[in-house]
Image (cartoon, rainbow, N blue to C red; front, side, top):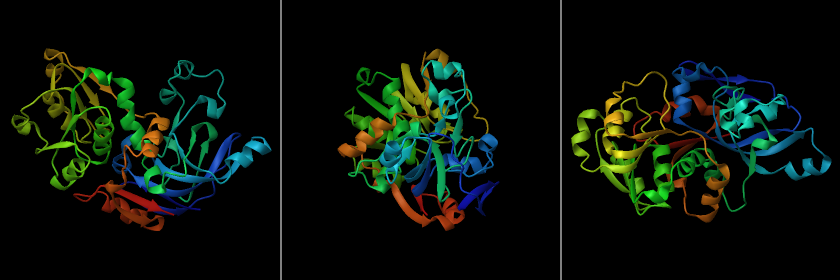
Length: 334
């Protein structure tokens, strides 16, 4: 099969053997894959990953191993999306690690992560995942919508981590792909959601769905333009400088949710957290079922965020394009 592998700082095309299946795993033909900022950070050395990146996808089940004939028939041909953390139970490890026993499977001590940690990802014609990771895609959801399920689930995770009823409004710092999805998810629960960002064209996408916007430069010297503080603020800039600005955005005794992942350290002063007694929450993967429900209900439609779709064979060109100013979601179609 055709796949792309990390050869820092770029992607390189490679003919690879088809993935081998463990019992209760599925072989998936990738129908559509998304390029994420994490994929770009991987090219910079994030997690020192050397395989095939890509963790946002919608696929079709073409083979299943180690299940009954009835279960195999039920799975074959289904459109699916897949959770990216592969845990103890999928590998058959016994006893399960302490985090799996506590129900914290996204923090499994032995986990691999699709396209990020020791597990080849979706920038390929095929990939393999355990059945327990798969979620069927309803017919009412298009491939272009379904490819957003993983990042949309990450946005939904915030609603599981904070009591949203405590807040009358919220701020999102950043105007990129994940920040846009976070704003849309928060908007389903709050009347006022304000996105602070550097790019006017990206901010305009938020205004189309009723999100308020503020144009800032995105550095600490620009905090004077932030004239309001919020009880709930979400940092989703993908930049090392974002945390400092986000602290200024958060009111005393407020809650600050951190979403950015990037390669390298972030300079930070901790005194604002202490003096303002801010609650800081790290936030990563989220509930796929809730993301799928949002798409099916029509409350969130991420397709306006798609800038361009490339053939898989042009993945190297596509990831360069994804790094250009003003570009939002870039997709790959095998």
